[in-house]
Length: 390
Ligand SMILES: *Cc1c(COP(=O)(O)O)cnc(C)c1O
Image 1 (cartoon, helix red, strand yellow):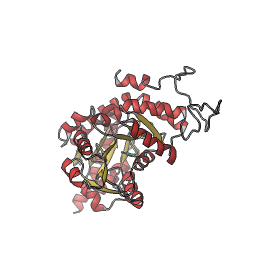
Image 2 (tube, helix red, strand yellow):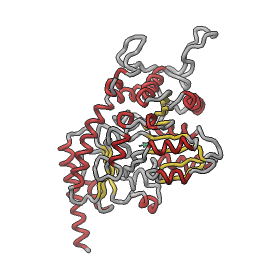
Image 3 (cartoon, helix red, strand yellow):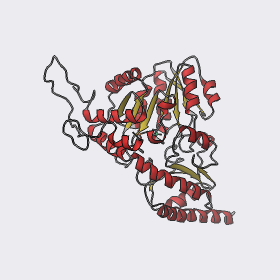
Image 4 (spheres, rainbow, N blue to C red):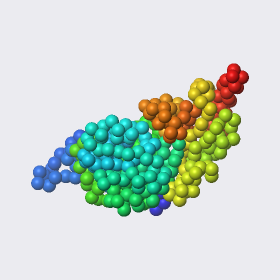
Protein backbone atom coordinates (compact mmCIF):
# COMPACT_ATOMS: atom_id res chain seq x y z
CA UNK A 1 0.00 0.00 0.00
CA UNK A 2 1.17 3.52 -0.76
CA UNK A 3 1.70 6.09 2.00
CA UNK A 4 -1.55 8.01 1.40
CA UNK A 5 -3.57 4.80 1.74
CA UNK A 6 -1.62 3.62 4.77
CA UNK A 7 -2.43 6.90 6.53
CA UNK A 8 -6.11 5.98 6.35
CA UNK A 9 -6.19 2.19 6.39
CA UNK A 10 -2.82 1.27 7.91
CA UNK A 11 -3.52 0.15 11.45
CA UNK A 12 -6.12 2.46 12.89
CA UNK A 13 -8.77 2.80 10.20
CA UNK A 14 -11.88 1.61 12.02
CA UNK A 15 -12.76 0.51 15.52
CA UNK A 16 -12.72 -3.29 15.45
CA UNK A 17 -15.55 -3.63 18.00
CA UNK A 18 -18.16 -1.15 16.75
CA UNK A 19 -16.97 -0.37 13.22
CA UNK A 20 -16.81 3.33 14.14
CA UNK A 21 -15.10 5.39 11.43
CA UNK A 22 -12.67 6.86 13.94
CA UNK A 23 -11.03 5.16 16.93
CA UNK A 24 -13.15 6.14 19.96
CA UNK A 25 -11.73 8.32 22.73
CA UNK A 26 -11.49 5.89 25.65
CA UNK A 27 -11.78 8.46 28.41
CA UNK A 28 -11.02 5.97 31.18
CA UNK A 29 -8.22 5.90 33.72
CA UNK A 30 -8.65 2.27 34.70
CA UNK A 31 -10.10 -0.98 33.35
CA UNK A 32 -12.24 -3.54 35.17
CA UNK A 33 -10.67 -6.99 35.45
CA UNK A 34 -13.40 -9.56 34.79
CA UNK A 35 -11.31 -12.44 36.10
CA UNK A 36 -8.35 -11.74 38.37
CA UNK A 37 -6.71 -14.91 37.11
CA UNK A 38 -6.89 -13.67 33.52
CA UNK A 39 -5.78 -10.01 33.39
CA UNK A 40 -7.19 -8.03 30.43
CA UNK A 41 -5.11 -6.23 27.79
CA UNK A 42 -5.57 -2.93 29.65
CA UNK A 43 -5.38 -2.36 33.40
CA UNK A 44 -4.41 1.26 34.14
CA UNK A 45 -4.33 4.03 31.54
CA UNK A 46 -0.77 5.20 32.22
CA UNK A 47 0.33 1.70 31.26
CA UNK A 48 -1.96 1.52 28.25
CA UNK A 49 -5.12 3.00 26.76
CA UNK A 50 -6.85 1.75 23.58
CA UNK A 51 -6.91 5.21 21.94
CA UNK A 52 -3.23 5.72 22.67
CA UNK A 53 -2.44 2.22 21.48
CA UNK A 54 -4.11 2.95 18.13
CA UNK A 55 -1.93 6.05 17.65
CA UNK A 56 1.20 4.19 18.77
CA UNK A 57 0.56 1.38 16.29
CA UNK A 58 -0.13 3.91 13.53
CA UNK A 59 3.16 5.80 13.96
CA UNK A 60 5.19 2.56 14.31
CA UNK A 61 3.61 1.35 11.06
CA UNK A 62 4.33 4.62 9.21
CA UNK A 63 7.97 4.82 10.36
CA UNK A 64 8.53 1.12 9.72
CA UNK A 65 9.47 0.34 13.33
CA UNK A 66 8.62 -2.33 15.90
CA UNK A 67 7.03 -0.24 18.68
CA UNK A 68 5.51 3.23 18.85
CA UNK A 69 4.99 5.44 21.90
CA UNK A 70 2.91 8.56 22.44
CA UNK A 71 4.07 11.18 24.95
CA UNK A 72 2.59 14.36 26.37
CA UNK A 73 4.90 16.55 24.23
CA UNK A 74 7.83 16.31 21.87
CA UNK A 75 10.11 17.19 24.80
CA UNK A 76 8.52 14.40 26.90
CA UNK A 77 9.33 11.96 24.09
CA UNK A 78 12.89 13.28 23.80
CA UNK A 79 13.46 13.31 27.59
CA UNK A 80 12.06 9.79 27.95
CA UNK A 81 14.40 8.52 25.20
CA UNK A 82 17.36 10.16 26.99
CA UNK A 83 16.42 8.14 30.09
CA UNK A 84 17.63 5.06 28.19
CA UNK A 85 21.13 6.34 29.05
CA UNK A 86 22.90 6.11 32.42
CA UNK A 87 25.29 8.14 34.55
CA UNK A 88 28.72 8.20 32.92
CA UNK A 89 27.35 7.93 29.37
CA UNK A 90 28.35 10.43 26.69
CA UNK A 91 26.34 11.50 23.63
CA UNK A 92 27.32 13.14 20.36
CA UNK A 93 24.61 15.61 19.36
CA UNK A 94 23.88 17.81 16.31
CA UNK A 95 25.05 21.32 17.24
CA UNK A 96 21.87 23.02 16.10
CA UNK A 97 19.34 20.77 17.80
CA UNK A 98 15.99 22.11 18.92
CA UNK A 99 16.47 24.60 21.78
CA UNK A 100 14.52 22.47 24.27
CA UNK A 101 16.72 19.47 23.50
CA UNK A 102 19.84 21.62 24.01
CA UNK A 103 18.41 22.83 27.32
CA UNK A 104 17.60 19.39 28.77
CA UNK A 105 21.01 18.07 27.71
CA UNK A 106 22.98 20.99 29.17
CA UNK A 107 20.88 21.95 32.22
CA UNK A 108 19.25 18.73 33.44
CA UNK A 109 20.96 15.58 32.18
CA UNK A 110 24.38 16.90 33.24
CA UNK A 111 23.13 16.64 36.86
CA UNK A 112 22.54 12.94 36.24
CA UNK A 113 26.03 12.40 34.83
CA UNK A 114 25.00 12.24 31.17
CA UNK A 115 27.30 14.38 29.06
CA UNK A 116 26.92 15.68 25.49
CA UNK A 117 29.32 17.01 22.87
CA UNK A 118 27.70 19.21 20.20
CA UNK A 119 29.18 18.87 16.73
CA UNK A 120 28.37 19.87 13.16
CA UNK A 121 26.92 16.49 12.16
CA UNK A 122 26.81 17.51 8.49
CA UNK A 123 30.50 16.52 8.64
CA UNK A 124 30.56 12.79 9.52
CA UNK A 125 34.29 12.94 10.27
CA UNK A 126 33.55 15.37 13.13
CA UNK A 127 30.98 12.92 14.53
CA UNK A 128 33.52 10.09 14.50
CA UNK A 129 36.21 12.33 16.03
CA UNK A 130 33.89 13.22 18.95
CA UNK A 131 33.32 9.57 19.95
CA UNK A 132 34.95 8.68 23.28
CA UNK A 133 35.20 5.37 25.16
CA UNK A 134 32.12 6.41 27.18
CA UNK A 135 30.02 7.43 24.15
CA UNK A 136 26.74 5.51 23.99
CA UNK A 137 24.62 7.42 21.51
CA UNK A 138 24.39 9.83 18.57
CA UNK A 139 21.46 12.25 18.46
CA UNK A 140 20.59 13.90 15.13
CA UNK A 141 18.17 16.41 13.73
CA UNK A 142 17.98 16.83 9.96
CA UNK A 143 17.26 19.19 8.31
CA UNK A 144 18.34 21.37 11.21
CA UNK A 145 16.49 24.32 12.62
CA UNK A 146 16.45 27.13 11.44
CA UNK A 147 19.28 27.01 8.87
CA UNK A 148 18.23 23.65 7.32
CA UNK A 149 21.56 21.89 7.28
CA UNK A 150 21.37 18.24 6.25
CA UNK A 151 23.08 15.35 8.02
CA UNK A 152 23.87 12.22 6.00
CA UNK A 153 21.77 9.71 7.95
CA UNK A 154 23.10 6.55 6.26
CA UNK A 155 26.72 7.51 6.91
CA UNK A 156 26.27 8.72 10.48
CA UNK A 157 24.02 5.77 11.48
CA UNK A 158 26.68 3.43 10.04
CA UNK A 159 29.29 5.17 12.23
CA UNK A 160 26.99 4.60 15.22
CA UNK A 161 26.64 0.89 14.36
CA UNK A 162 30.39 0.47 13.90
CA UNK A 163 30.97 1.84 17.42
CA UNK A 164 28.00 0.06 19.02
CA UNK A 165 26.12 3.32 19.70
CA UNK A 166 22.41 4.02 19.68
CA UNK A 167 21.38 6.39 16.86
CA UNK A 168 18.41 8.66 17.49
CA UNK A 169 16.83 10.99 14.93
CA UNK A 170 14.37 13.84 15.52
CA UNK A 171 12.23 13.57 12.36
CA UNK A 172 9.82 16.44 13.17
CA UNK A 173 10.62 18.59 10.11
CA UNK A 174 10.05 15.91 7.47
CA UNK A 175 7.72 13.29 9.03
CA UNK A 176 7.66 9.65 7.81
CA UNK A 177 6.05 10.84 4.58
CA UNK A 178 9.35 12.32 3.39
CA UNK A 179 12.01 10.65 5.53
CA UNK A 180 12.14 7.32 7.37
CA UNK A 181 15.33 7.27 9.45
CA UNK A 182 14.81 3.67 10.65
CA UNK A 183 15.15 2.51 7.03
CA UNK A 184 18.43 4.45 6.84
CA UNK A 185 19.90 2.68 9.86
CA UNK A 186 18.64 4.64 12.90
CA UNK A 187 17.52 2.88 16.10
CA UNK A 188 14.95 5.40 17.35
CA UNK A 189 12.96 8.13 15.64
CA UNK A 190 11.28 10.96 17.55
CA UNK A 191 8.62 13.52 16.64
CA UNK A 192 7.15 16.62 18.05
CA UNK A 193 3.64 15.67 16.84
CA UNK A 194 2.68 19.23 17.80
CA UNK A 195 4.03 20.19 14.39
CA UNK A 196 3.25 18.53 11.01
CA UNK A 197 1.74 15.30 12.34
CA UNK A 198 -0.91 17.06 14.44
CA UNK A 199 -0.81 19.84 11.87
CA UNK A 200 -3.54 22.17 13.13
CA UNK A 201 -1.91 24.16 15.98
CA UNK A 202 -4.35 22.59 18.44
CA UNK A 203 -2.44 19.89 20.30
CA UNK A 204 0.94 19.40 22.01
CA UNK A 205 2.19 15.83 21.60
CA UNK A 206 5.28 13.68 21.11
CA UNK A 207 5.95 10.32 19.48
CA UNK A 208 8.84 7.85 19.44
CA UNK A 209 9.35 4.66 17.45
CA UNK A 210 11.98 2.00 18.04
CA UNK A 211 13.54 -0.10 15.32
CA UNK A 212 13.32 -3.33 17.33
CA UNK A 213 11.23 -4.98 20.05
CA UNK A 214 14.01 -5.09 22.63
CA UNK A 215 14.61 -1.34 22.52
CA UNK A 216 10.82 -1.01 22.47
CA UNK A 217 10.43 -2.88 25.73
CA UNK A 218 13.15 -0.73 27.34
CA UNK A 219 11.37 2.43 26.23
CA UNK A 220 8.03 1.03 27.38
CA UNK A 221 9.47 0.62 30.89
CA UNK A 222 10.41 4.31 30.83
CA UNK A 223 7.10 5.46 29.33
CA UNK A 224 5.12 3.54 31.94
CA UNK A 225 7.53 4.36 34.76
CA UNK A 226 8.21 8.04 34.04
CA UNK A 227 4.58 8.47 32.99
CA UNK A 228 4.71 11.35 30.50
CA UNK A 229 1.93 9.77 28.42
CA UNK A 230 -0.41 11.48 25.96
CA UNK A 231 -4.05 11.78 27.04
CA UNK A 232 -6.77 9.96 25.08
CA UNK A 233 -8.37 13.10 23.60
CA UNK A 234 -5.02 14.40 22.39
CA UNK A 235 -4.22 10.96 20.89
CA UNK A 236 -7.45 11.23 18.93
CA UNK A 237 -6.56 14.73 17.69
CA UNK A 238 -3.14 13.53 16.54
CA UNK A 239 -4.74 10.59 14.67
CA UNK A 240 -7.18 12.97 13.06
CA UNK A 241 -4.29 15.19 11.94
CA UNK A 242 -2.32 12.21 10.68
CA UNK A 243 -5.02 11.25 8.18
CA UNK A 244 -4.36 14.34 6.05
CA UNK A 245 -0.57 14.44 6.55
CA UNK A 246 0.30 13.64 2.94
CA UNK A 247 -2.23 16.02 1.42
CA UNK A 248 -1.20 18.86 3.72
CA UNK A 249 2.52 18.30 3.12
CA UNK A 250 2.09 17.97 -0.66
CA UNK A 251 0.41 21.36 -0.79
CA UNK A 252 2.63 23.15 1.73
CA UNK A 253 5.85 21.76 0.28
CA UNK A 254 4.85 22.77 -3.26
CA UNK A 255 4.20 26.31 -2.01
CA UNK A 256 7.43 26.35 0.03
CA UNK A 257 9.46 25.42 -3.06
CA UNK A 258 7.86 28.19 -5.11
CA UNK A 259 8.20 30.75 -2.32
CA UNK A 260 11.87 29.84 -1.77
CA UNK A 261 12.62 30.49 -5.47
CA UNK A 262 10.57 33.67 -5.41
CA UNK A 263 12.25 34.95 -2.22
CA UNK A 264 15.74 34.56 -3.72
CA UNK A 265 14.74 37.23 -6.28
CA UNK A 266 13.20 39.71 -3.82
CA UNK A 267 15.02 42.94 -2.95
CA UNK A 268 16.37 42.99 0.59
CA UNK A 269 16.49 39.18 0.92
CA UNK A 270 20.18 38.38 1.40
CA UNK A 271 19.91 34.61 1.53
CA UNK A 272 17.27 31.86 1.38
CA UNK A 273 17.78 28.58 3.23
CA UNK A 274 15.78 25.69 1.73
CA UNK A 275 17.00 22.22 0.80
CA UNK A 276 14.85 22.30 -2.34
CA UNK A 277 16.98 25.06 -3.90
CA UNK A 278 19.63 23.61 -6.22
CA UNK A 279 22.07 26.09 -4.64
CA UNK A 280 21.65 24.49 -1.18
CA UNK A 281 24.96 22.76 -0.33
CA UNK A 282 23.23 19.48 0.60
CA UNK A 283 20.44 19.61 -2.00
CA UNK A 284 21.43 16.29 -3.60
CA UNK A 285 22.08 14.53 -0.28
CA UNK A 286 18.58 15.56 0.79
CA UNK A 287 17.16 14.12 -2.44
CA UNK A 288 18.96 10.82 -1.82
CA UNK A 289 17.75 10.29 1.73
CA UNK A 290 14.32 11.95 1.69
CA UNK A 291 11.51 12.09 -0.83
CA UNK A 292 10.69 15.75 -0.21
CA UNK A 293 12.10 19.03 1.07
CA UNK A 294 9.34 19.90 3.50
CA UNK A 295 7.48 23.11 4.18
CA UNK A 296 9.98 25.03 6.31
CA UNK A 297 12.39 27.60 4.89
CA UNK A 298 14.37 30.50 6.32
CA UNK A 299 15.53 33.76 4.81
CA UNK A 300 17.81 36.56 5.89
CA UNK A 301 17.22 40.29 5.83
CA UNK A 302 19.89 42.89 6.60
CA UNK A 303 19.28 43.09 10.34
CA UNK A 304 17.01 43.74 13.29
CA UNK A 305 15.40 47.03 12.05
CA UNK A 306 14.39 45.38 8.75
CA UNK A 307 13.02 42.35 10.58
CA UNK A 308 11.00 44.59 12.89
CA UNK A 309 9.49 46.50 9.93
CA UNK A 310 8.76 43.20 8.16
CA UNK A 311 6.92 41.72 11.16
CA UNK A 312 5.01 44.96 11.74
CA UNK A 313 3.76 44.89 8.15
CA UNK A 314 3.05 41.20 7.53
CA UNK A 315 -0.61 40.21 7.87
CA UNK A 316 -1.41 36.61 6.92
CA UNK A 317 1.00 34.26 8.72
CA UNK A 318 0.90 33.78 12.46
CA UNK A 319 3.95 35.29 14.10
CA UNK A 320 4.64 32.57 16.61
CA UNK A 321 6.82 29.86 18.04
CA UNK A 322 5.98 26.54 16.30
CA UNK A 323 5.71 25.29 12.75
CA UNK A 324 4.03 22.62 10.66
CA UNK A 325 0.46 23.84 10.72
CA UNK A 326 -2.36 24.51 8.26
CA UNK A 327 -1.72 28.23 8.66
CA UNK A 328 1.66 29.70 7.72
CA UNK A 329 3.82 30.58 10.72
CA UNK A 330 6.65 33.09 10.79
CA UNK A 331 9.12 33.01 13.61
CA UNK A 332 12.12 35.05 14.62
CA UNK A 333 14.74 32.60 15.92
CA UNK A 334 17.02 35.25 17.46
CA UNK A 335 14.24 36.32 19.85
CA UNK A 336 12.13 33.16 20.03
CA UNK A 337 13.58 29.64 19.77
CA UNK A 338 17.22 30.67 20.19
CA UNK A 339 16.85 33.67 22.52
CA UNK A 340 18.65 31.87 25.35
CA UNK A 341 21.69 31.17 23.21
CA UNK A 342 24.67 33.59 23.59
CA UNK A 343 25.02 35.94 20.58
CA UNK A 344 28.38 34.45 19.48
CA UNK A 345 26.99 30.89 19.59
CA UNK A 346 24.01 32.02 17.57
CA UNK A 347 26.20 33.81 15.03
CA UNK A 348 28.39 30.71 14.67
CA UNK A 349 25.26 28.74 13.73
CA UNK A 350 24.12 31.37 11.21
CA UNK A 351 21.25 32.50 13.44
CA UNK A 352 21.79 36.20 12.85
CA UNK A 353 19.51 39.10 13.79
CA UNK A 354 18.22 39.20 10.21
CA UNK A 355 17.08 35.57 10.05
CA UNK A 356 13.37 34.77 9.70
CA UNK A 357 11.85 31.26 9.56
CA UNK A 358 8.72 30.54 7.55
CA UNK A 359 6.64 27.38 7.91
CA UNK A 360 4.39 27.40 4.87
CA UNK A 361 0.74 26.51 5.40
CA UNK A 362 -2.21 25.96 3.10
CA UNK A 363 -3.10 29.54 2.13
CA UNK A 364 -3.29 30.46 -1.54
CA UNK A 365 0.29 31.07 -2.62
CA UNK A 366 -0.55 34.28 -4.50
CA UNK A 367 -2.05 35.75 -1.34
CA UNK A 368 1.10 34.80 0.57
CA UNK A 369 3.31 36.40 -2.09
CA UNK A 370 1.33 39.64 -2.04
CA UNK A 371 1.54 39.79 1.75
CA UNK A 372 5.25 38.91 1.94
CA UNK A 373 6.03 41.38 -0.89
CA UNK A 374 4.40 44.30 0.92
CA UNK A 375 6.16 43.34 4.18
CA UNK A 376 9.51 43.11 2.35
CA UNK A 377 8.82 46.52 0.79
CA UNK A 378 8.27 47.92 4.30
CA UNK A 379 11.59 46.36 5.37
CA UNK A 380 13.34 47.83 2.30
CA UNK A 381 12.20 51.34 3.30
CA UNK A 382 14.10 50.97 6.57
CA UNK A 383 17.20 50.09 4.59
CA UNK A 384 16.86 53.33 2.61
CA UNK A 385 16.35 55.41 5.73
CA UNK A 386 19.40 53.92 7.46
CA UNK A 387 21.41 54.18 4.24
CA UNK A 388 20.58 57.87 3.71
CA UNK A 389 21.08 58.63 7.41
CA UNK A 390 24.65 57.32 7.18
C1 LIG B 1 8.85 21.66 18.61
C2 LIG B 1 10.00 20.72 18.46
C3 LIG B 1 10.38 19.87 19.51
C4 LIG B 1 9.69 19.89 20.88
O1 LIG B 1 8.38 19.45 20.79
P1 LIG B 1 7.20 19.94 21.78
O2 LIG B 1 6.02 19.21 21.27
O3 LIG B 1 7.13 21.42 21.65
O4 LIG B 1 7.60 19.53 23.17
C5 LIG B 1 11.41 19.00 19.29
N1 LIG B 1 12.07 18.97 18.12
C6 LIG B 1 11.75 19.79 17.10
C7 LIG B 1 12.52 19.71 15.82
C8 LIG B 1 10.70 20.69 17.23
O5 LIG B 1 10.40 21.51 16.22
